[in-house]
Amino acid sequence: MTIQTIHQTNQKSTPQTLGGQRIDNFILTVWEPLDLLGQRLLGDLWRIVYLTLQDAIALSILFAIPALIGGSQDNLEECLKESLWDIDRYSCVVIWLSDFCLWIVLTGRTIIRCWRDLKTLGKS
Image 1 (cartoon, rainbow, N blue to C red):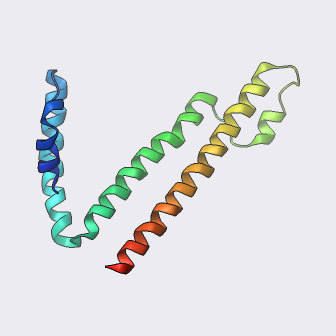
Image 2: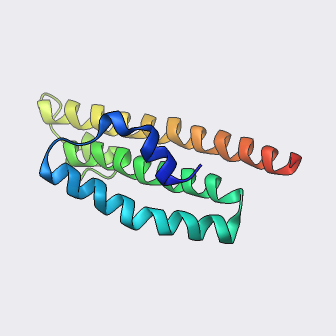
Image 3: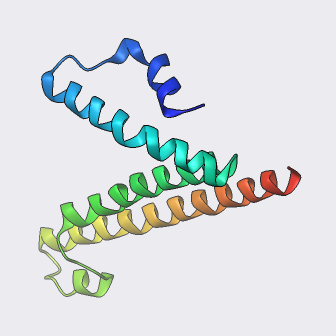
């Protein structure tokens, strides 16, 4: 299934604004040749590569969200240097822990997906 056929099946969600139409047109003109090149070079493996790159972009955005909210606290020790009664200390700890949990969940998801894809490739 190429990008063009995916786009044609999603025609009911075409953008209504001029900016949305320009972005949609840009995506079609850039991704269609890239999709054809990927299919020619990698064959069936191209879909796995394409989905993995798509996940990597989404995960990098998700990993950046807690850092944007919390500022530049890189480790838990920096959070604990704040005053015991200061609200910044608790917000820093909560943001750091949520970032840590996000890394654990997404890393596990990535490992499971890679393992599943390797098993699928091994069978075919």
